[in-house]
Amino acid sequence: MDFYEKTALVERFFDAATPNAERLQIVDDYGVDYILDGPATQALGAYQMESSPAFRRVFARGEVGIYAPASKSQ
Image 1 (cartoon, helix red, strand yellow):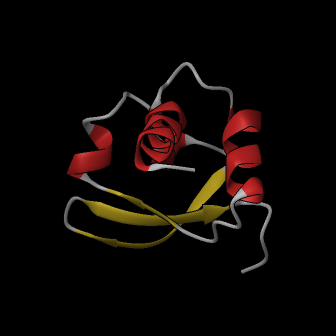
Image 2 (image 1 turned 90 degrees about the vertical axis):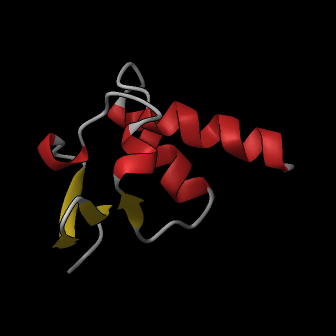
């Protein structure tokens, strides 16, 4: 996968219209354990990770949060 494909995938992840099932599939397909959410990712789309049942916040400081899939054990 090249830079442009990865960029499109990240933009799709943070698009509010993307279903959580698709987000979780992306996380699973690429072995993602944590997602960094801050001003740069929030500028990509309107998806609000803090209000999603699919992800849980594991760390926060200022405008930045780190999230893990809710299905993964703590």
